[in-house]
Every structure is written in C-alpha cells, then in structure tokens.
Length: 89
Image (tube, rainbow, N blue to C red; front, side):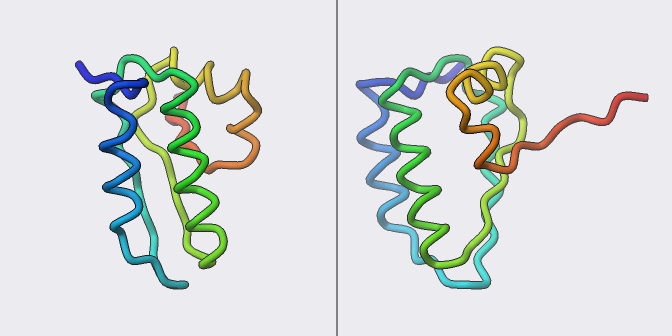
C-alpha cells in the first residue's frame, strides 16, 4: 500500500502543481490505497486544497481508511475539506 510522506510528497506536490484548475473543476481524490500520511503529506493536501479554493473549485476526499479519517479529524482538516462518509445502514 501507499504512503504520502517526506519521500513521496514532493512528487505528489509536483503533480498537483501541474493541474490546471478553473471554477468548474471538481476533484475527487481517492486515497483508498494510502495507508500512511505524515505531516509533509498533509501539507501537500492542504496546499492543493488552498489552490483549488482560490479558483473556486471543489475537492472531495474519498476512500479514506479509519486511520486517515482520524488524522484529518485530529488536525481539524475534516472541518475544511469534504470527506466522503460511508452510509451506515
């Protein structure tokens, strides 16, 4: 499984920086294969979120593991970013 950390985050940042964003852009970031994310990875996610927000685009995070959901909640990012929540039936 994947990790977004000090070693891999720069590549992700480059990918995010190369994306052209406009007001009608909608991004759904599938993090289902990410098992671990450190503060560097969170920083990259926040950077992309801010870039999208400036351009009035939308971002939704999907497929988060329990661990990642907890990380986003603890850091308060779950209050800013739209995170898919599975329906409980």
